[in-house]
Structures are given as C-alpha cells and as structure tokens.
Image (cartoon, rainbow, N blue to C red; front, side, top):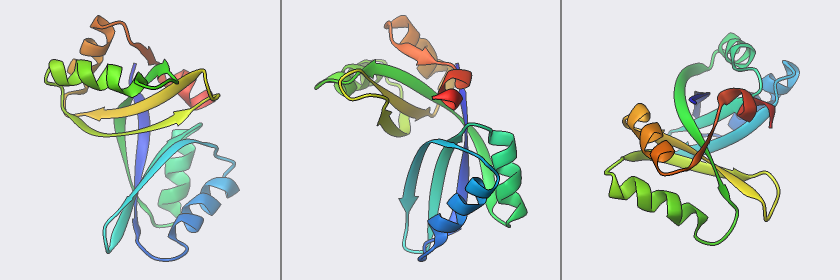
Length: 143
C-alpha cells in the first residue's frame, strides 16, 4: 500500500531541474509524478519513478543527494469536493498531512493524491476504514 518516492536535493539555480531530468532521461527512467518545493538556496524535488532503484543510482552517480521515503497514493473522483472528502476524514481523525501533491490520469475520471503522513500506517488505516482506494506502488509506477 506504500509507494516509494525519492527526494532529490538540488541548488536553486537555473538548469537544476534540467540536470535531474537529463540524468533520468539518459537512464531511460520515466517520471510518474513530481513535486518541486524551494527555498532561496535549495530545492527538494520529490519523484515517483517507474524504476526507483535505477533512478536513484543514476542520480547519485551524478553527485545528487537522494533520499527514499514512503508515501500513499489515493485515488479519488476528479470532481469538485473530491479533495475535501479526503481532507475532511483525515482532519476528523487527527491525521497530520506533512505534504501532498496530485495529478489527474484523465480529466473527469480520477485524480491521484500523493500523501506523506507523519504516521503513515495510521493514515492508511484511516483511509481504508473510510472506503478510500489506495493504490499499490506497482500500479503507480506503471501509470
């Protein structure tokens, strides 16, 4: 039920994202989802890849600092209030969301929300108890 993602720490300068994406492209790694957050000096690029082992190795080979972590991918209907339906349940059960990002497979069908919880197992339990669909990593890596 958990999805592996990597976080790549990079300088906040022109060409930083291009360097990461070039390394992955050269290694024939496909990016399934990403989120980029920055401060004035550095950025954290969070990636879900089709081959996390090869992607991590390629990036480390280029000198990037890479860290693995687990996140949860939840499928919700792509409609107004879809995100609220899940955030309401999480808030009601006092589950802390450290960060989240999302993407849509096909407009009007389903959205995939990627969550990082401070207690990932508790977050998964609350979502399952409330009927949400959690996608296994193997499915997310192939999207």
